Amino acid sequence: MGEGTDMGNEFEGRWTRYYIYAGAAFFSFFVLLPLYVLIIIALGAPNQTVAAYYPALLPTKFTLSNFINAFRGTGILLESAFLKSLETAFIVAVIAILLGYHAAFGLSKLPFKISSLIIGVLFFSTMIPSITIAIPISETFLRLGLYDSSLGLALAQELLVLPLTIFILSGTLDAVPKQLEQQARVDGASFIRALYQVIFPLAVPGIVSAFLLSWLMSWDEFTFAIILSPVHPTLPILIYLDASARGNVLTAASFSLLVTIPVIVLTIILSKFIRAGYLTSGITG
Amino acid sequence: MTKWRDSWTAYLMILPAVIYVLYLAFYPAVDAVYQSFYALHGGLTLYNYDFVNSIFGKSPIYNTFVVTASALALQFAVALILASLLSKPFKGRAAFSALFLIPFGVATIVTGVIFHNIFSTYGGYANSFLRVIGMHPVNWTGSYITSLFVLILADSWKNTPIVTLILLAGMTSISPNLYNQAMVDGAGIFQRFFRITLPNLKGFIAIALMIRGISEFNIFAMALLLYPYQLLTTMTYSLYDTVNAHPAYAGGTILLAFVLIFAAIIMTYRGKYGRGY
Image (cartoon, rainbow over all chains, first blue to last red; front, side, top):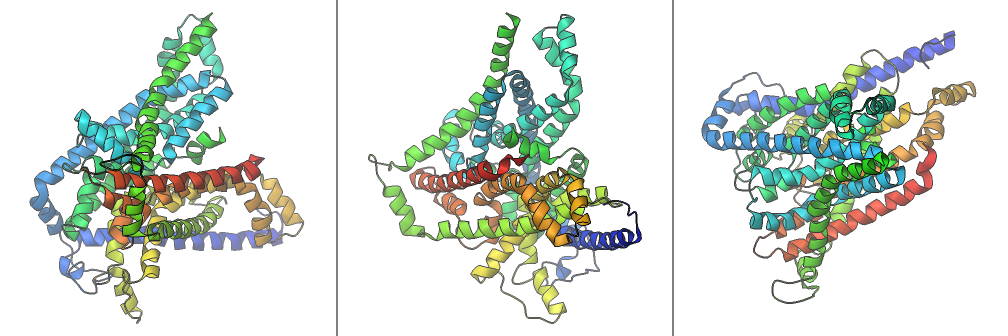
């Protein structure tokens, strides 16, 4: 479509643009509305939000006391949950890159039939419901002393992240010109040196986005966290407990805002890198 | 010689990832299925399934189907519109794409907490809004239909961005010439959508269905917060007990079976229609 060449097309183009902006505005409203509700609960005066029978749609009084009370009430719990989430997400992302980079490189060297078989196995693993395997894993971890530890939780969450990381990095490695590696080999570089010194620098953008995506997925993860680490919970589990069993809605909202801010920043950074190709490459081969 | 050694190095590099997945995903899954046929004291039995059935009946299975189907319908309808919007060139498209992606990053549990506050029967924002426009408040968790509505709304808010991304990738892969030709032939916007966009999207729709459908069967955190009825996941979780995990294994096995059947259906569909790209 683009720029119209005659009057009729010009007219239609303008109307199409109006519809596009109207639609975009409409959906933006629904995307932002829940975030607005989160912000006013976390920052509004309680008598206008959770303590009101009909909370104000446009509150007028704002306060930081919800945050201060949330921290004062559960300071140590929050700190340990925050550290646990941070630590777990970091381990998940590091393992994902370590295993994923090598696996993606290895896959790029194998004949198509074998590599697609292996990718099929990896993809199949992502279909297995977390809750189905979390229970046997919890029994194994109890035996191994990994139950309730950051490392154990990270090892389980890795299952959700690793196949995706391999798909992303396979896509990245495919984009690296084949001649570069061949040239390095001709110049006498070994397989291993080609891997770390020639290819790695070129794959950095893909590695960074895979790292951030893995980090993000672990930061959000709930099912494994609640089964494998219930005693020393991660942030999502802490929020769940505050919102449900403990009934501290304000604390839950404050923590939710705290969890959400870094993640929104990350998502906007990632929006340049997240492409559907990452999600679909595993299936399209 | 070097070629032979290279391919062994390649296998060695893949091995850790494959062993990892086999040991921590496939083995526990097989173990869960196996254990579900054993009771705490005694041999091969269907006792766990009878037990689960006697407590919960068939309703968790039915509820899981209803939630999955309605959430997928809502997400695909909205994502098709959003992807069509974003596939057109207009000023500010990049900004809108980033904005529409935001819910993807918001944690599932945070989404649950937000929608819990919006749809509380007492002190919820939805009822506040209804009062402002002069309507009666609704007891959102009081009926099957309204609880379903709240759950799929929350779930779709969070997950539509992924569907949009995939469908958008599909739409940008369709040649603009097809549309130009259709316009020359006088096809209207709806005709173009049903005759060109949808048929060319089939493969991508299958992929999005696969990814979302499987997660939809696994909807858990949000259901714990928002949905007063049992799904297969929340049922399995409520059966979970470290002393006797066998009934929970039965729940997990039923869930696994449904996910695999769903995946097989989508794969068949993709095999039929999805070769076009």
